Length: 467
Image 1 (cartoon, rainbow, N blue to C red):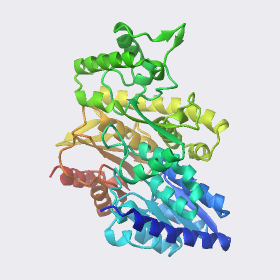
Image 2: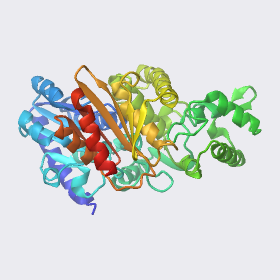
Image 3: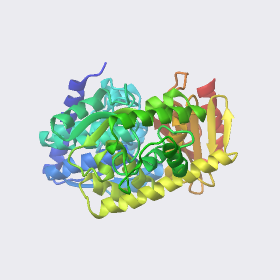
């Protein structure tokens, strides 16, 4: 059972220790992951520390493994604060840093480790870290324990949750601890909630482009197909221009949106899709009231996608700068990165649709992306595939090369997957059995293993998921 009071008590203890480090002028390094939740949570933690006067730095890394731990240890900071990382390596962290670290996370870990004083993990307080609490929300709780004034950081908690696809409640809503952060954001006048279509670029792109740029869920015949989308909407008689200027979704009337719904329902049905795809296109919209409606930062999901693009395109500094308030060079740079990121995603999906890179092992779909999927893109690709109509009832396992000696894996469960499995535990145990590292939560997880152990690792995962 969720226990917010116990969580805040632990956060207060941790904040007291951080305050002591500040008074002693100790050097603190915030280490976080490269995805949207990682960049958001790392920024929340760093921002709160910097505001308090602590000597703090922040760094984003794609993986936390033994090689990364050795590199971090060599930097000789006095204290390490990990966000969205670390729950699968508590013994290793203890060996490397003693008790001079704090893990703020939502990935599943053994219950006995969750009760340690230097672990602030959602699972330790009765929250499902897969759907009810992300690392950004956990970092936010730590931030308000440090100082109530940090409630203005609540939008970043929302962005992290959306980036981790935790909008899994009714009408694509946030639940659990994420909802608590949302309440703070609403009460502070920072976020507004409405119900509408969830197209990417709903306020910033022409309608047909916004639909074509929507990959979650994947819309058969429209996602990644701008010309086809334009033809479908024009053929249905929707008014797409106003005095020569393309209209966006936010400009449509209620009647026009109803017509758009009818067009999409018919089109998706004729292309082999189901009504479930249509229902996933409508839900709660989270608008950041202090952001410019003409930028992607006004819509919470677009903000999250922008951060993911920064992380996957090896520009985590840009993503962190945006989270910390840069609305000049970092924002313009991130929008260019977004275009490149979308292009890479689309190219990878087209390659998968045209080739023989996917093999079926019962209800597990294994994607071999060694020659066309970059290491930082595996999570994005697995998420896109798992949200598609074709793989919605499957487990998707994407692999690609990581340097000369390792393989990187990312896995996701489709929304209609029937069996009760926990990917975080499965990938952790499978990776450790072959000398690698892995972990995550029930619906999504990752691993890094030696190249020579590929078949052995894959067989263990397939057996655990399908057996």
